[in-house]
Amino acid sequence: MKPTFTFSIIGGTLLVLLMPNLLVAQTNDYGTTRRPATCPSRTKPKTGAPSVEQAKMYFICDYEGLGGIQGERGSYMWLVGDINIEVAPVSRRFTPNDLPFNNRNGGTQLGMDPDKPVYDIRGSYTSYSCFNWPDKVGRNCDVDYFSDSTGICFLDTFGGWHCRMIGGQMKSERNVPPPTN
Image (cartoon, rainbow, N blue to C red; front, side, top):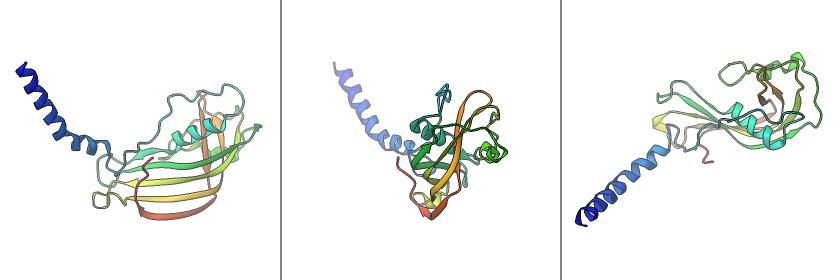
């Protein structure tokens, strides 16, 4: 019985000692617990327009990401919040004007399928660009507020949905705290 009690004390003591480190480990180099979103699947809906919730999810997954060499000074993270999106109820054909939406942050191509229908979207969102500046943790993000943005939801050549918006009126703030949710 005594060894169990002793191990309980040791285990409890270790837990108390390690708890601050666990909390610190939950934040990243950008001073937030937020991580860029990823979409486990992009295949719904099979037909018709994406719902507003689906369009938001695909927009977030396309927009958010990491850049630079993670863990090194100057690396960065894109996050998005306060998203309002309207999805057009009817589709239209692809046009060459849609090509700017084919680029992901960082310049990679999304593989837009020009033979599939395109759904126009419009809305507003808040964009966070947070940088790994150890001397500025807690005030290391730039925030851009976009209103009256326009974009599209489209299918790539593998049948996955993407939703992108650009432009619109913008207001900016610099050196602000990172988002918490």
